[in-house]
Image (cartoon, rainbow, N blue to C red; front, side, top):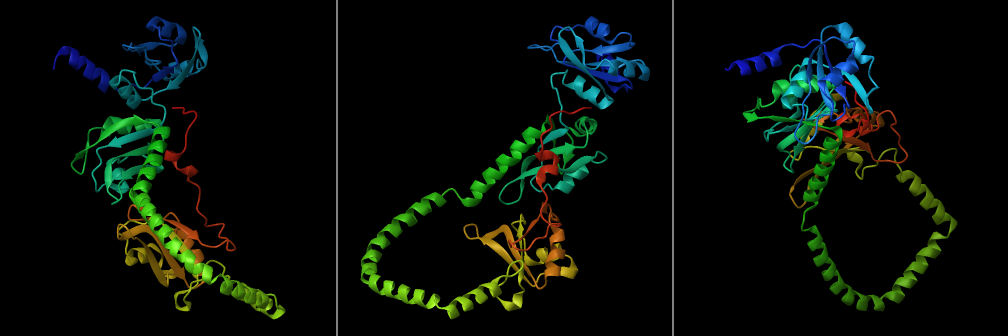
Length: 385
């Protein structure tokens, strides 16, 4: 190792305890301008990079003491020339990131794009990979194909920018299940767009690209059948008219109206009434299950005190496998309410959404919550770090 390389290594490995960052500096700024702006703060080093195309709008300053940091923070929102300058306290991890990219990246959101994930990767694997670094709640997204395999990339949101800097400093180019992981600074908006695009692509694949052609063929066949059907329909038109007239006269009688109203009242159930008396009458719909789900997986999903009496796994007729949806039936209203507590509970690495199929029955305490709390689906207007 040469003397210059050793000097650079010592500078990067040194722990900088009193760092600050200036944001919004002019393109033509010099170190003398920075010293004049921060006076009377005692400065150890100024890290200011002049990129080829344009100067960086940020710079890092190493100060001598905590008192100098407090003085520097008081100068936030003051002007350097005609530019309003923001001053932030910084960390050693952010300093390493700044020096690695030479100030060319202004990273505002604690989101990292993860490339190189193996096909069998789960959210638990990602959490274990970023061990000792706190990840935001619902802050992991892995892009998957129709077979529920990871396609190699995803996003991770952390609770703070300092955690994001540490993650990219420690775990970039590390291995997860023999796959080298690339970590790239990202934003909430980029993650949100990726999630939306993936959902759209998977939805098109799920429906099938040739469905439209099949619909056209069916439409043409129906037109041919309609011509022959219209010939026979004209002959039975009079008979149909007389039958309708007899039914209307029957329904207008007081006795028939009373019978019909009583029948409609009895057919309504609090949630959803099953067609079979042996299978229970309270229906809950499930969505988001793995495509390899079996009945035993659904029974393990619900607690032992509210097991469904019947389970229906909806099949994809084209692909001949489960499509992720299902119906479960319960004997009592209490069992249905207890089962709704499992809304957004995980089955393997997929969280499951539960719905009550009724307009009259209300479970206000157990309805699905909005996705707005998910850090990957919200946009921040301002991030302080």
